Image: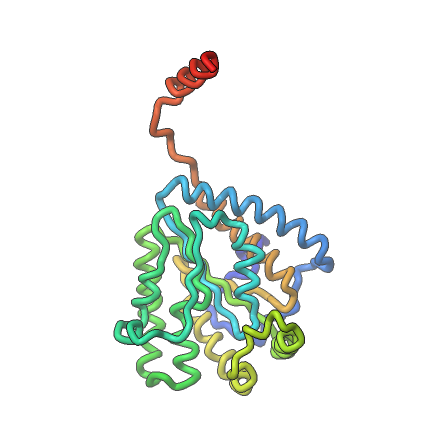
Length: 277
C-alpha cells in the first residue's frame, strides 16, 4: 500500500486518534536511511512544484494542524522548504485581528488561498474555529457545529475552481509533547516559542484529542482529504509527508505548457549571434 492510502482518513470514517500509534514508522528503523528517501522525495517535489508553476492551471493548498509542539514549523522547513519560494508561501493563523473578527470566520482563509500555479501552506488554518474556539468556549456550540459543513462547502468550492487541497494532522503523544517542551526550556534559541499557555493547555489534552477526532471525521472529503501522520519521530513525519506529496502531485499528470515563441527561429538567431560573437 502506498503512503497516500496508508495514512488517508477515508471520507465518512469515524476517527479515534487513540487507535493510531504516533510511534509508527512503517518498518523504518534508521533515521540515516530515511534521510536518503526524504532527499530523493524533496528533489522530486521541487520538480513537481515547478511543473505546477509553469502549467499555471491549478493551485495547491496544504493545511497543517497539530497540537502544540506537533511539528508544523519543522515540516515546513524540512519538507515543504524544498519548494521554490517563487511559487510557494506560508500563511500562519494566529489569534484573529479585530478586522478578521469583523468578518465571517472563513474570510481570512479565503484571503490567503493560492493563486493559479501557486502553493500555499496554512500553518494552522480555518480549522482553528472547530478547535480553539470549541475548547476555550469562544463561541456557542450551535455556532461551531455549523462550521464543519461551512468548511466542507468552502473547500469544495476551492476544489471546483482548480485548487487542490491536502491536509496533514501531525499526531504526537502526550509524553512526546512534554519531552519537546523540555527541549524548548533547555535550548535558549527556542525560548521564543514558549508561551504562557503551553502547560495550562496540557490540562485540556483530552478535549483537544476529542476535537481533533471530530475534525478529522467530519471534514475528510474526496476533494480535501485529511491524513494523520505519526509524528513522534520527526524523521518519519518528514518521510511520510514528502512521500504523500510526491504521490499526490504525480497523480495530477502535469505537463509543461507549449512554448509561446517559435523555438526554431529563436535557435537560428542564437546560432547566428554565436557566429558573430
